[in-house]
Amino acid sequence: MITMRRRRLLAAGAALAATTQMVTPVLAQETYPNKPIRMIIAFAAGGPTDVVGRLLAPRLSEILGQQVVVENKPGATGNIGTAMVADARPDGYTILFSASTMAMAPALYGPQLGYDPVNGLAAIAYVASVPLILLTPMDGAKSTAELVAMLRKDPGKYSYASSGNGGMIHLASYLFAKRAGGDALHVPYRGSAPGMVDMIAGRHGFQIDTLQSSKGFIDGGKVRVIGVAADKRLPQLPDVPTIKEATGFDYAINTWYAAYAPAKTPRPIIDRLNAAFNQALKQPDMVKKADELAIELVNSTPAQAKAFYDGQMAFWDPIIKESGAKPE
Image 1 (tube, rainbow, N blue to C red):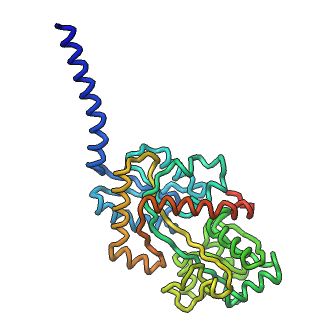
Image 2: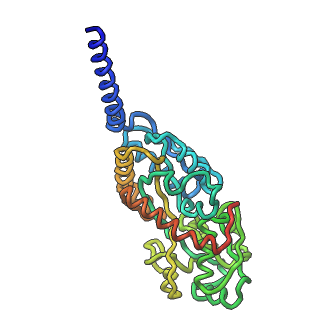
Image 3: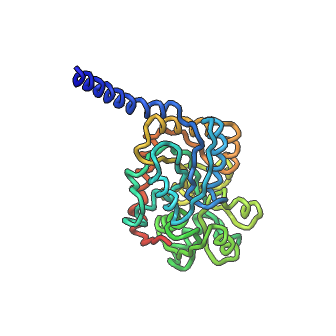
C-alpha cells in the first residue's frame, strides 16, 4: 500500500513538472516584454545606423510598454555587436539593429567572422532603405555621363574616397567604376566626412554616399550631386537623374537597416517585435523625419526580412571576391 501510494505521488509529481515546463515558456512569451530591452547598434554613436536606431527606440518603447535601451557596440565593421547578439540568450531582451555591411561581412571575414551569418540570428524586420548618391567636386565632372567618360579614358587616374575598406561606400564605388567600364583608385578613410573634405579639395574624382551624410556639404555648395543610385529619382533631388537614366547601365544600390534577434528566439516574441517595428515606422513623426533624410521606410514580415538578407549576401559575395577587398 505504501509503495503503491509512493509510486502514484511520484508519477503525479513528474506529470506536474512536465506541465510546468510546457506552460512556463508560453507564459513568458504571453507577458513579453516585462523588463527593458537592449538594442545593440553595431556601429558608433552619431553614424547613420545610430541615427535611425535612435529614432526608432523611443517609439518602440512606447509601443512595447518597456524601455528600449540603445547600446553602441562598434568595431570590425559591425561584427563585434553582431556576435554579441548572436551569443545572447534567445529571450527577446537583447536585439540587434544593424546595416547593410552585415551582408558583406561573411565574404570579407570568412571563418574569422565570429558568428554564423545564416543560422546564428533570427530576422525581425527589414526596416529602411537609403539610396546612395553620386557626388563630385564643384570643379569636377558635371554629369554622370562625363564622369563615366573620364573613367573610361584614363582608367586608374581618378580616385574615390570611402569610409573604410570593405564597407558599402567602398564596394558601391568599386561596382560603379566597373559597370561604367573604367577603373578608379580606392582611398579609405575613417568615416565618409574626411574623404568628402579631400574630394572638395580636388584630391578625388568622385564619392558615393547617402544624402543624410552629405547634406551639409550639398547645402553649402561644396559638392555637386550628379546621380542617384536608385530605380527612380528622389523626391528630395527631383532634378538629379538616376545613374541608369544617365548611362544606360543598371546600377541601383541602397544602404539599408534591419533588426535581428538571437537564433532560437521563440516565434511569438519575434512576431511581437516585428509588429512593434512596423507600427513605429508608420508613426507620422517618424515618416516626416525619414522623408527629410531620404530614408525609405519598409514594412516587412520576419520571413521577408530573412529573404532580403540572404539575397543581399548572395549579391555582394562575388563582388567582394572580385574586388579583393579586405577588412581593416
